[in-house]
Length: 499
Ligand SMILES: [Zn+2]
View 1 (cartoon, rainbow, N blue to C red):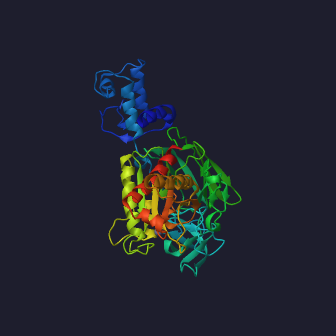
View 2 (cartoon, helix red, strand yellow):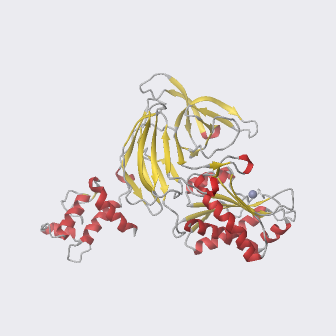
View 3 (cartoon, helix red, strand yellow):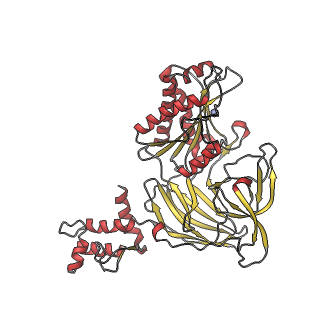
């Protein structure tokens, strides 16, 4: 289906796109024998198929892709497919980028930072505490920015921060700070190419240098929720219809592109903000509310690749990451009976894996059941690198008030909200129906848990009842309770996909 879609779109739209697979002379599909497979070769085959062109003897052999003795539209499609399957990584050249380490237009020096972590978190610069905001997005490895002050230590977390000229903070441990040369304003070109695969649509941007940028999904109304955090999506609805990616220190931005094959992106447009010396690439979604995350990184050729997840409508062919909370020497909350949160979350995770695999998903775990498991910060980075289609973190709640019972689900990004709401209603229902145990739905809420602070997929943390409540614990600690908690999470995922 996708291949067919691809062929049609290539025929219709990519008329100026020149594919340049080097092929040896006489290779099938190379109609003019120039050693390259081009859309123009496919056109010649089409013309022959339509009787508009009489082929030479060698063209006749070359055009008959399937070797059935006839030249048909199918043969033209086969040539097109060879062109369309070319990976932009293979034919885009290398971008020459400058860095503050060398002098450019100015010999003035300044204090810089370079992001050294795979995906450096950024935070608001209006306060110093270690508090994440979903409006501040991470910076890919290699990004440069001017440092205005720092390091400043947050007394509570003991972490160091640097303040950046672009209006954000970064963690000291995710950057390297140095004195470099003042950089000229940046220029960006959006390349006229898109890469599609079964689960994503990717664009390629050539930047003079690796400037900081901010990605925001809008429009979205927020209300104050749990713990006075003002980032709950209003009425549990995610309403984003576009994403703005704003590049700092950028005065020139150009290039446009169409997305005939994408089910997630409709089109995009540049805005130049002369006052702030920034440029914004606005990416309109095909359908409002249909957005599943993005990844941004520099590839080997220095292109900034931004990859958008295609809509998640089935588990078939998708990768779901399960994070069984705690593990190893991090037991999590205790029940008072010697059973700890880490043991139960792992068992629930195994049950959930069974449900997801039956539906055709590939399941990856954030940890195994051994004594050495990754810290939460490492789990967050691993998730970003693994780039799953969904992240489900499983935990059990705890309270000093033993009467407190019920399940709740937490999300960070607005587009993770709908998954959290779906699971929050389905979980207690499945548990009640399967085990007879009633526990309240304590709702879905924004909260900046470390593992869910990812941009690339819907990510939620599920608190599957209170380990400190005797009724909830009895259910959680039974094979049947674990099974129906897993079923509740699975039901929520299905509801989310089909909503
Ligand atoms: Zn926990």
